[in-house]
Image (cartoon, rainbow, N blue to C red; front, side):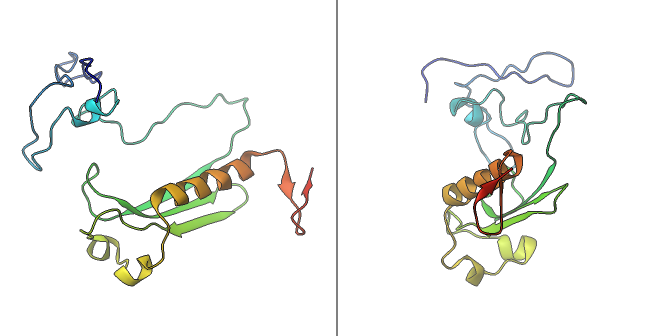
Length: 155
């Protein structure tokens, strides 16, 4: 954790900047987590203003790839649950990526939330391995090189 005090970049309902700082001891009522937890880990927002997905506009003239992403988690808590399955589909080609992810905690509500049984996680790779594979999948979609059936790059 950095010793530098950082203030949340979020905006309150009243239109003012959020006053929570990285050294705040305020906790949320639901889970008892520190509101400053994301700020302490390098984020720009507190727990209440955290952006779960980063979205930016694409200029209309720039070619882009649309990828549909589906995440399954160990529970419904967006900040405390672990990702246990990742799937992605290329919107134009239909290429598919899917993998289970070994939960990093013993507590697993995945079966109750999304009907993934514990046996499906036996031998599943860690999140870092699956994320690396997902990145390679996406890079392959956006690369000017395509793999032929023999595995040779061709244009």
